Every structure is written in structure tokens, then in C-alpha cells.
Image (cartoon, rainbow, N blue to C red):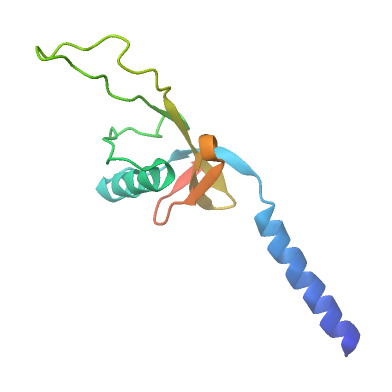
Length: 122
């Protein structure tokens, strides 16, 4: 009986570890709708903070990477001020781990699960 319990515990631990060790692969969205866009926007805010970003309806449909550029400050005439900031673009990667879509933020090595979002390996 003790051996059976030990075997079951080892199988359980092995199963949990294999899910955690699943390989993340670049992915593309299989469906884009307002709910998916909202989920992505919230994940981006969760990852980097700040304001809600505007995303195109084609986000993550052709490329697994998204680069967000920071806005440029404008002068009193509405003209961009050159060199007003030197903040680099921020990169996000849509990935699939097993069958779960996630948004990866390399800057913080952060992975956010995207519920109700379907994607496929690229």
C-alpha cells in the first residue's frame, strides 16, 4: 500500500512538472474581436502599467511580436518636439504554452495568461 501511495505521489509531481516545463512557442491569434482586444489591453497594463493602449484589429494576426512606441511630446503649435524622449519601444510576444495563450513581456520576464483568447503556434 505504501509503495502504491509513493508511486501515485511521484506520478502527480511528474505531471505537474511537465505542465510547468511546457515549451512556449510564438503564436498568432485565431480570432480577434472586441473581447480579445480588451483582454490584450488589460494584460499590457498589468505588465507595464500606464494608460490603456490602442490596438489594431489585426494585432497578433500576422506577427507574434508587438512593439509599442511611446508618444512624442508636442509644442504649443502641435508640432512634435524632436528628442523629447529617448524611451525605447516596448516589446510583447504572443505565445502558446500547451493549449494556453499567454502574453510575454521580456522586459520583466513576465508571462500573463490570456483567458478566453484562442491562438495557434506560428
